Length: 560
Image (cartoon, rainbow, N blue to C red; front, side, top):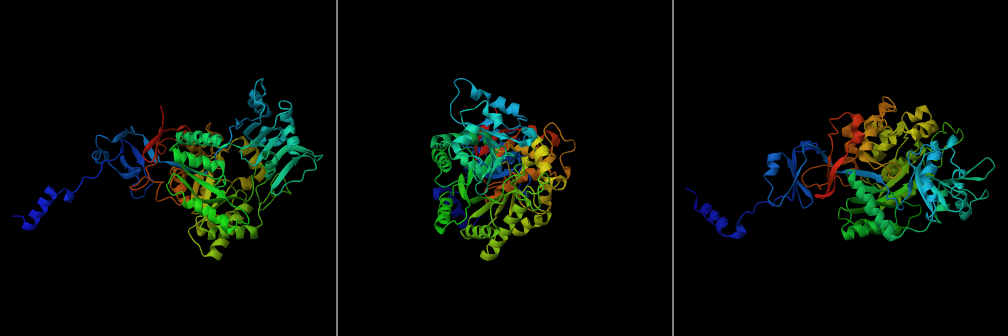
């Protein structure tokens, strides 16, 4: 016989609504018939997943998850496809203007052909903007204004190279900018000159600003349009987050465009934006950066990181090296900071609680960044800031262990391992065989225990994540060249590449408890892939597509 007290309790549960245990709310969405790679060591694989209010309720068996659904639950049948956490591009840039795409042109003639529609009758008389060329597109790897002047004698032309660190201007633009043989190189910049001292039209690093200052400003509506267009494209590649490394002022049109999209509910994926890292930043300036970070805590638009530049690029011979370039025996690049000033500035940002990311390509610049982070930790007594080195293309072997020791993130770009004509014909010869053999060597960073976050540096390279994963895993082009891969010792596994684009990228932005893995409580950000990336030959990785992209439990892109 049940006790009197138990009988009374049962009567209360039945008769008094407030005492009745309610059933758990049904999920808004479930994914079934899937092959889920969760990225969670506690449960690496699953068949199904349930989502409610933008977060994951559970991952598990198909039967268990189906039993949770109600009549209002959306059911996604993955049809046996591979599902992975949403991809996170840890180093990305929002293009602010449409441009003529010159990537892969291969020759001056092809560059001219792509620009030709702008020479036709009725074409705009405004600026001609292009980007994506490489040094090997020009005879003797020597870009020159003469290749533009015949077609554009009276319109300003500015063509940025694929790395975004040098641009080619035509003669008309040089005249408008007042750039002559007597114009001095600006600080942290170089004006290309021929043997007689005349400007060739090549403007490197800060020298690009001499021409860009004349461009009409981008309007807020134009910037907003670029946000919508570019983030929609990002979603189509399976990206659910991007980290914009453009060093944007909090009141810039770029930031205002992001804020408008957030306000109007048109932000399809999550964005984190870097603010400027600058010498002499005042306490008030740093406080303003902290305020904008603290004002954006909703998980869609974030701040809290500052971007600085320590050097340029190998192709432009502006990356800061410890020893001279192989093809320029007296040139060691263009370091943009003195160590003492860098140390002081990093320490100031660190004290303010801001994360720092420093562009450092050459081994000298990478060492400067690591030395500055060492200084900040010592003088401030801080830990866990997760400061970052962006690109890390040529770290000195002796500096590799310092990433793990210091807790510094190696923010690398998977597509930089792509052995295209610029890599083989410009980048590698500039470094020489020994240094080229350890450039963009993702395996060496992994073996050193560094946390490595993958990005694209878009629009420097495509933001197609699977193209980047293919490059990192095979170190080949999609056509299979070169046989065996470019320095194959530096290849990494598919699982490592996916982790760098998901969990590690989330860790790099202090968001590993929110996203990057598919586990209960995490944001429901995931992508359904056309093929199982862990089961197909690596040579086919580049052709894998996102068939569905889900952010916060909402389908933001679906292949039709």
